[in-house]
Structures are given as structure tokens and as C-alpha cells.
Length: 324
Image 1 (cartoon, one colour):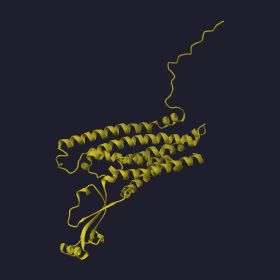
Image 2 (tube, helix red, strand yellow):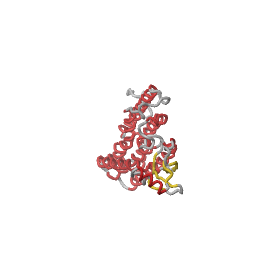
Image 3 (cartoon, one colour):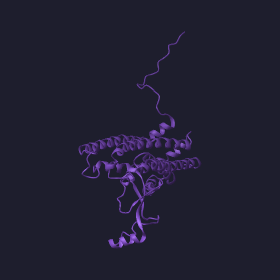
Image 4 (cartoon, one colour):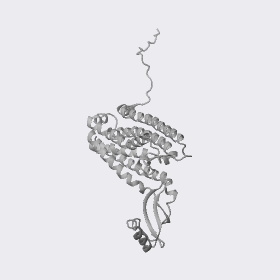
């Protein structure tokens, strides 16, 4: 006697393989709002930068630049300033709204205890969160930084901000991705320690603002300075037009240096007498050149990435040793 195989009932849905499984699927589903927000920032930010670059190009072409000098020394388009302000605020926003709540929210709501009572270890769960969030932050920051660098490089002479200003230095090259990763890692670390979402966000905001102030002072220390000497009455060499001044002196023929204001705050006759008395014949200018910018940025990015690695290792060590 033979039997005819029965057909499985049709439910109207064809089962298929998921792109994500297990813990990755859980993390992406849990943080889909943050990940989708980062995707939106990447797409919309890219469109905005391309649009503003095209707008600047049209303005400069109409003005005959670079063959003709601009009637204004810099491009005064409001869009450029807004883009730089947005990129400058991106690391802080990521730290406060992505990093700080990442684990603190789970601790506060009890999700951490629920997940880690299953077959998943705390270390694996947190490491998966790091991987997805760091990857999304890195892609967003790298794309926006690359596009802004593409905009800024050929037109840097018409931007109102110089290369050494934080609005440019921290938004081009490897600096923006490194800064975003570091502050996101700092927000996550603060969240793990504070264990409360709002408290973590507030502390992270203060910390990120303090880092911004400190880092702006660090820029001048990311490369060895150069010194140039030129005659006292001569104009500053044109190659120093884009330089970052670190210090300035006046010097005698035998190489002795004096403070730049030694003879400046006097009457003309007294100033001339002061110059003769000290035998001052040269200006001495200490500076950083625009050609040093890439090396400075990679040095700064290396410092920030090392800090990111330290903070990440600390969080992973802590969660492996103590319950969340």
C-alpha cells in the first residue's frame, strides 16, 4: 500500500533566510532608530554638502575666480558656515544621543539583565553593540568628512575660516571620524558608569564640550614648529599667508631674541631708539604651515583612536567582570 505525501499548508509567506541572525539581528532591531538616523544623516548631509559646493562654484565662476580677485576677500555664503557648524557639532550629538544611552538605557530599563540571562554572555552582547554602533558612526563621519574635504581643498582660500580653525581642521581628513568615534566611546563609558540615561547624557555633554575646548588648544602641538627670520622693515613673506602663528619675536644680529612688543608700545622716536639700543635687525616668526596639516591630522586622529581603544577595552573589561 502506498501513501501520497501530504502538502504542507500554505500560509501565504515564503520563508527565506534573514540577512541578520541571532545577536546581530537583536542589536540592529533594538537600535534601529539610531542606525536609521545615522543613515539619514549620511544621505541628507552628503546631498547638502554637494549642493553647497555646487552653489559656491557657481558663485565663484560668475565672479571670474580665480582669474579675478573677489570683491570680498572670502566667500560669504551662509550655507558654508552652516555646514561647518553642523559637522563641528556632529561628534557631540553622537556622544550624547547615541553613545550615552547605548548601554545606560538597557541598564535603566532592565534590558541588560534580560538579555544576559539567556545564552548570550555580557561580553559578547556589548561587543556586538560596539561593532554595529562604531561601524555606523565611522561610515557616517567618513563619508561626510570625505565630501567636505573634497569641497574645501580647492576652495580653501575663499573660506572665511583658515585651515587651523577647528571648524575646518576637525571636519576634514581623518579627524572627523576619529573625533566621532572617541566621543561616542566616551559617551558609552560614561553611560556604563552612571547607569542612568539622562544623567549619562548630561555628563557626556559637559565632557564633550570640555574636550572640544581642550582639543582646540592641542592643534598647535601636533607637529614641530618652523621658524623663519626676515628683515625688520620687510613685509612678511607671502608663503606665510596661510600659516598658523605660534609665536613671534624681534632679534639682534647676534641672534638674541626679544619679545615682539619690546619697542612697539612707544612713540616713534622712542621706538627707533629702543631698536638701535638693542641692535634689533630681524623679525623672527614661529609657525605651522598648511602643508603640515595632513600629518597633524593623522597624529591627532591616532591620539583619538588610541583613546577610543582604551575606553572600549575598559568597558569590555568591566562588563565581563561585573553584572550590568
